[in-house]
Image (cartoon, rainbow, N blue to C red; front, side):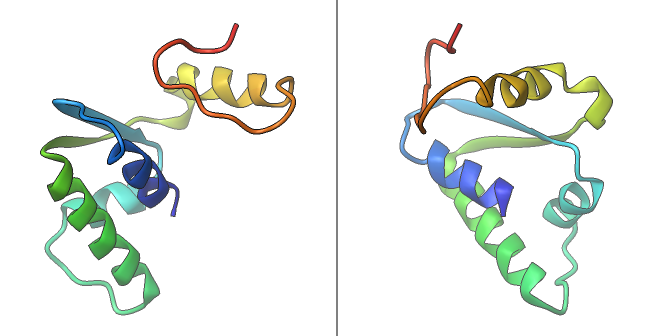
Length: 93
């Protein structure tokens, strides 16, 4: 669901090329497999594939959780920011 939300958010912008990194090997493989999974997971993956196609040049990349320091930094900073918000060009301090 996180990948689907990220793709929905990206659809609001006009990026020419996007690389979406994830640390779930299961989701990464499902997005690249032609196999249809036999449950609700398949529906979410199908939605992700359709969203990715509508974005244009889209690349999915698997990155081990320990190597994704940018995501960990953002997650740690989230607890210090009051209220909800979104930034797209300049990250919070």
